[in-house]
Image 1 (cartoon, rainbow, N blue to C red):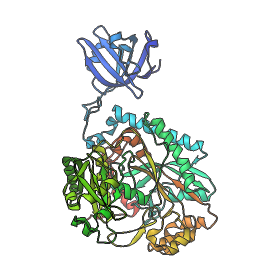
Image 2 (cartoon, one colour):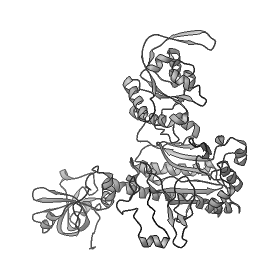
Image 3 (tube, rainbow, N blue to C red):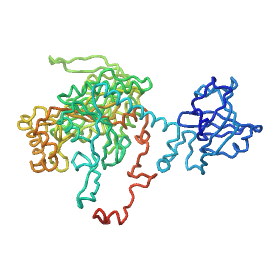
Image 4 (spheres, helix red, strand yellow):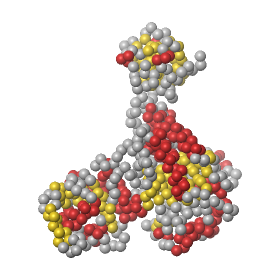
Amino acid sequence: MHAYRSHTCAGLTRADVGSRVRLSGWVHRRRDHGGVLFIDLRDHYGITQVLADSDSPAFAEVEKVRAEWVIRIDGVVKARDPELVNPKIPTGEIEVFIEALEVLGAAEELPLPVFGEVDYPEETRLKYRFLDLRREGLHANIMLRSRVIRSLRARMEAQGFTEFQTPILTASSPEGARDFLVPSRLHPGKVYALPQAPQQFKQLIMVAGFDRYFQIAPCFRDEDPRADRSPGEFYQLDMEMSFATQEDVFGVIEPVMRGIFEEFGGGRPVTAEFPRIAYRDAMRKYGTDKPDLRNPIEMQVVSEHFAGSGFKIFASLLEVEGNEIRAIPAPGGGSRKFCDRMNAFAQGEGLPGMGYIFWRPAGGEIKRISKEGALEVEDSEVEAAGPIAKALGPERTEAIRVQLGLGEGDAAFFLGGAPSDFQPVAGRARNVIGRELGLTVEDRFDFAWIVDFPMYERDPETGRLDFSHNPFSMPQGGLEALGAQDPLEVLGYQYDIVCNGVELSSGAVRNHRPEIMYEAFRIVGYDRHYVDAHFGGMLSAFRYGAPPHAGIAPGIDRIVMLLAGAENIREVIMFPMNQRAEDLMMGAPSEPTNEQLRELGLRVVAKT
């Protein structure tokens, strides 16, 4: 017999009754039932119930074991009584009577429990991550991640893509986040950078003539953590293809994403088609470029109903060019209590408030002027209520109701000013309204492509132009567009894939023409010398015959987070850092020794 096990803790069935077996694993739970000791023995594969009574030669040893001790047992497989069968586990029809037990690894008192899914402080969980990973839910998430990656590889290879590895130590490159720098011992005063993404290398692979590349790529960015972003490092399905358009990328990624979410989504429906939504439309309708389409609410511009109206706050806002008023329809939200709660939500988000109208049953007449100028009168079954309704009057409020398609028991919320100021809050308010009113459909995966991103944006503080997305993207219209159009009107062949309000990836058709790249950077204030200094390797390659190419890089951590139904990305990463970008388990970052600093020609200067 094997030194440690003849079977795993998920491998025994009724067919093994009567067999002598050997199992090894962790003591998941120990129970004393009046002279009969039960142990749920756990390994990577599952759980088997083992037991000993006072007649067992191993009874005294079984009495000593505690939770999370690692033990080996020899015993005989017995069938459970019918009323004691556990249908929830594969081994639920049997149990093993212990004849011998050996302790392979005793455990001290646990800093957090493994049995059950007890909510414990995250700092404790991360410090003792090796224990946390033994818990059923987290263990399942990590195994899901492994299966997803294996499936991603198979799906990409099936479409003719080949996996290549790109360097980890490379040159610093401005790609939207801070680099992690690695000082060079052999070249004092110089540094390597860990790649924020394999962006330049994968484009060079296309120039080198490898047609379809992919990689499960580690990426490193020195940026602040969020619930959907892990600090330090993350992994993505990085891909690039030659002689490809934007539609070609969509044609590759859509079946991959749909297949992954159908395979691992537990039967939850997946979007049949991935709609294309222009960036400007997404911001106008949803207040964000990563809309959750499970929520059917779409915002609408209602400025015309407030211009010159008795609601002076919005009327005066509309006297400023560029300002507008938007409405968030709220079907079923027509109560003052709900409206007041949403107004308080807006105040909590830093706005003065959020105006509202709600419609309730009423009798009376609505008067309006027809296109021909005649007075029209009709009975109304609803009346508008709320401060805005009183200021606007019945004709304007009725026009708003008709435009928004609302009726009795419904409400609408209003935000006004410069769209860039109120859009983020409007987008979050739309999400809250959808959830609280039960409009957002749970247990479904709704994908969309966000397309036609602007190439440039203006910094609201400095007024300086900058790239809004990816500086390596091809502008729509090429060099002519850069020369003839207002930079803020130039669109790029840039696209994001979004699922349930989570951005999974950004991608683009690449700019493979040096003259277009020089002009694109000139517009934001960088001369040829800067471009040559920072992107010289790629520009040099482009001068020797570069094919048109395009790509994308869906984030694996976020894909698994959605599939697992996790609220925090750290729940799907084996060894994540905490919110301060610290590895509490390994003690990183740590202070270097003086010897290490001397080798690198460095010294630490204290911050003042």
